[in-house]
Length: 221
Picture 1 (cartoon, rainbow, N blue to C red):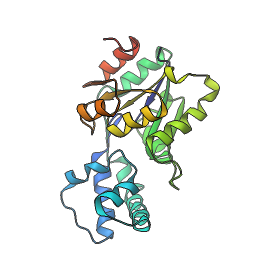
Picture 2 (spheres, rainbow, N blue to C red):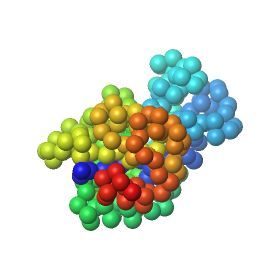
Picture 3 (tube, one colour):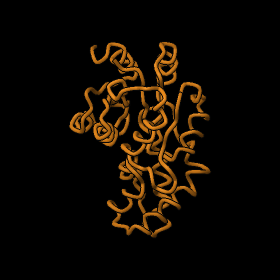
């Protein structure tokens, strides 16, 4: 039976496409790369930024870290709030809280930014714990974030069978599978239904209210 719900942030709670892609574009420009089509930068939403700069633009480790630093120049001032809350998320969180579920955040976005965003939208009160990536890169992948979150929730004495991640990309599903917990996907974010299922999500829904019903019924609709 699910007792604790772990939320992804980008693509699950908030639509952060504008802020992330514009900040990636800003960082690329600092490296002499012009990318006018922001849709080509959607692939940066979800995975660790440094890895994407290395893979997509063939940057060295040092260049990738510089690009991440340039990204944060814009993000920390402007990009962080270039996002919107998805419909139904606040209501679902409030409903789950009333029903006694533990709720926590597990995001690959730096933890200080996660906390600022949740506070901005008035969502902090729904979370028992908030975990994100570290600025030094020591914790960056979804699996690493989930492992840290598990450490922080240790006093709750929850088994992995009682944990469930809600996410929107294959990175969420794969990270949860590696950590050994269930994933329920949403299709309104930045990953396709097919790639989430292929990565290990047990179900993918179009609306967050459907996810809540699925959780309440412990995997039955």
